[in-house]
Length: 77
Image 1: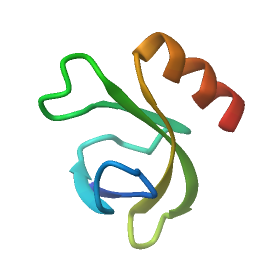
Image 2: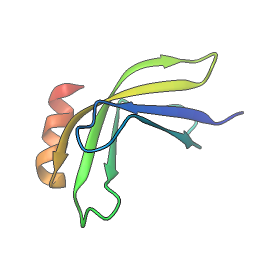
Image 3: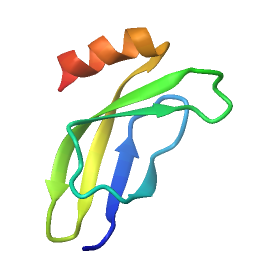
């Protein structure tokens, strides 16, 4: 079992980036706290998965307070 590469794109406050993940299989959404964000989070929905290369691509949906971002993720997924 290898590691997944998560690719995050379209976040207005940061450039596109990648992250190594230890998950067995990527979920439909990812909620990530911003670095130094004091509880501010960014929410991403999965756009595609390449099982062979173990790459999951996620698109930014919303950012802000977790209570506001979570509903946007559910609607966007």
